[in-house]
Image (cartoon, rainbow, N blue to C red; front, side, top):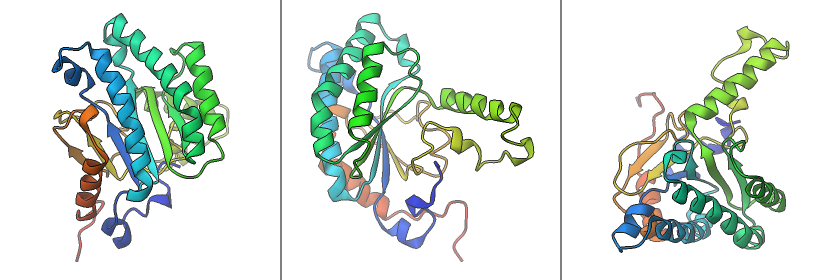
Length: 249
């Protein structure tokens, strides 16, 4: 369940250590490419390569769960050329990285609505999830055609159907119930959410799950983000006083 005890949230030990679950809004690929006089897709390819470095850095930093925002429900508003290029990039990335991710004990999951994705991409996503299902190293979650509001709406529909079918009583619905219907139901809530590129907004990402997450908005464009910068952010997180609404006496 999304709010599971796996995070250690709320304990002194949990606050003193680095984040166990880091979520990243990978922003700035297009601007990175344009600054170099290249098309936006050039930046997306550079950003995809950066993902590998960040995933590989997670074990030594104590990051068990990494969730990355790859494509939002709003990104369909971009040009057809860019959207088509991104979908092609996702297919190539999955096919290319599948064996490496499996060999490095990475468990991969995808969250988001798959209905609008093409059949070949969905098949590759299913295959990657299956190939890595037995791994228990870094848990990499890729948000693809994902939006926080869309996720909550889809979860609410499933919850409402269970109520209508008599599997759940309306009186039993509370804030502990809905997370069981979210895409992230098997994951702990994120401890730290990072957004690159200098933008200070969350862009409909993990709205429910990040209620008590710590945030870092940094100027670095995603293709320039490094394992060293991730380590600095994790160290900074470890110095924060996370009270979760309580007051220390």
